[in-house]
Image 1 (cartoon, rainbow, N blue to C red):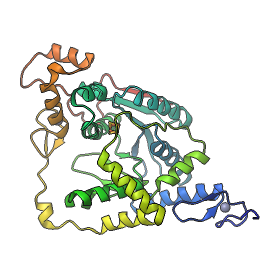
Image 2: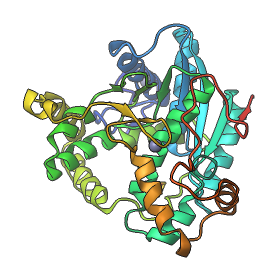
Image 3: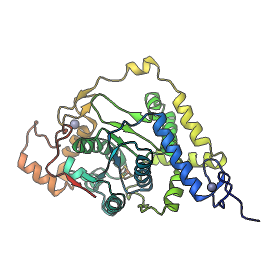
Image 4: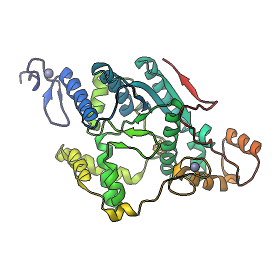
Length: 353
Ligand code: SF4
Ligand code: ZN
Ligand code: ZN
């Protein structure tokens, strides 16, 4: 069969089949359409204003590595006027996060974007290794998810940024829609497709890859020869999400538009006033000052549980020292208070490229 020409430029040879559309296209056209779609997502949702300071949540994995690369390229090409940072959270997972953070450090050099790394150990006194040794491998992702969300906010406050962008892609969002349907969680279903979330006084968060397919992100990283870390976390990820993922991949194989269709279905759900009325009033956590809808924020509630079981736990040396220094007592704040924007923690580390 003679080589086929690219369906978009009709001059170069087609070397790939685009997962989202099935078009046979050339490499340069693929880069261009992928980047332009992300640019359109950004401009249609009016995600940024000139002069914004934006932190890219960077794990060293494919999504955030491609996000950092594309954000830098679009910021230059379309003159968004953004000041970009890489923000990484070190969950303290030996043999996984320590290696992926090495990738982020190389990305910092390659893309010349300042990097800040913040660890669960320094924020909470617990690494995921210590948490798993206490709670086992069943609920570890619940702890990790709650801690990561707060850690990103704290890191962003330290960097004094206006906005955090994360590498969540269309597959992730479609999976979340499916999971919320399967759990009957209508309140979350209404929120989970939003490209942008922002509470009072909190840092804006958004997902520029909301409509980018995971397969295309992998393809982009591959053809651009980007340096990323592809190993899975050693603590098995959320099993329920795994089922949603397998189901979604089956649907995608039968009909590639399934991913976008599910996102659109999720978007079409409206939250009724009745559901909204059950949402709680925002306050601040008594223990750490982070925003919360209860007396204690989710992270502090989890930490209290961990600390109660401390006698048998493998708590980290650093946390043990801190607890010994503070002594017992109900007002003993073991988490670092929520930093005001612009303040920096003494142990924070910002490296400039
Ligand atoms: Fe954390 Fe679970 Fe992700 Fe591992 S798989 S990094 S434990 S959320
Ligand atoms: Zn082409
Ligand atoms: Zn708290």
